[in-house]
Length: 171
Image 1 (cartoon, rainbow, N blue to C red):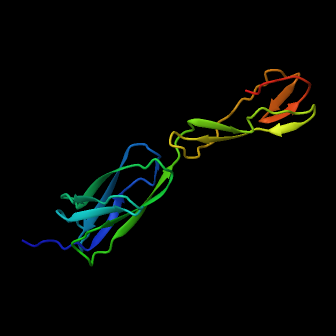
Image 2 (image 1 turned 180 degrees about the vertical axis):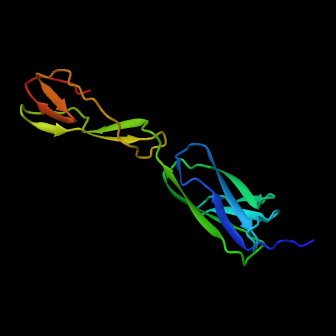
Image 3 (image 1 turned 90 degrees about the horizontal axis):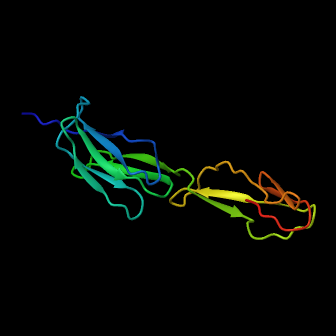
């Protein structure tokens, strides 16, 4: 019986992007011989290249593919992974990236939301920022601003204008 010699290692299944904290992604690495046939029974190590991350190990199946279930980080950013075969030093490792994107907006912060004292005709702009459930910056959502008393203050797109004397709340 002839045993195929592994000569190539490559990522063959990995999403380009994932939402922060969205669970697990399946990462697959294939080991092939000189005829590009998959090589079974090869131990593959998947190493996240971020500080403090733990390497995972799997063995290739009959198709030459090793599968890894990787938990998607909660912090948005680019995460690099290196696949290698520790027992074959001459087999070049492969690297791939997973871009973790912010999830949907879960929280709204308003800058300039402290009580304001304006003179009639003065304006100020309220600015907003959104974050996902993990504190990552998230895409802006539409906001409908409302004044509790337009005789005192109006608001349009976050721009507040004092229109008269008194007290008004901007919601």
